[in-house]
Length: 216
Image (cartoon, rainbow, N blue to C red; front, side):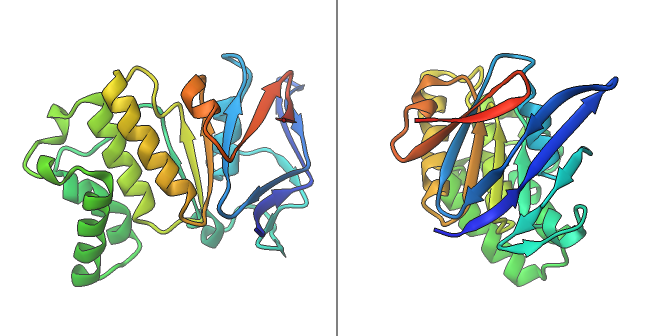
């Protein structure tokens, strides 16, 4: 495996206090990670920083061995973050999945083919005619995962993807996360879900007092 996204040190200051002070960190292709820690430990903040959605002091940032200054647009395109309660537009499932592709200039025929593939991958084809506002929490999460996957990002960050889901929806979401981990991308899942934490071949990273440690 080769490191996709790495950094030597990351610091996030709030009111002059270091909320996060960690490193080094290396996320590798084909590897799944679970990010654990108490509520308020900074898991969501760390995901947002890694996605380039929130600022922090970062030293030695690299992508595929290439040194990077700041978070340029090309790097942001390689990282997708799915929030705990993903927002869906009041259009259609297909249009929601296609949104990022359209924004990136993908043509009609290619875009439609990629969306069909993502719909099938997420198992939401039977919901094609259902307005997004009528979807259950699990269905919304699967559409959001399809919207992330279709972009072809190399690093996928998931914030509490199974929170507040029933057992069937959790199982469906976890199955998709496992499939993502096999797609030669780096997947980081912030969660408290014991089933996700105990998935085989997943590396646990624990965040406590602003520090990040690998858990054997």
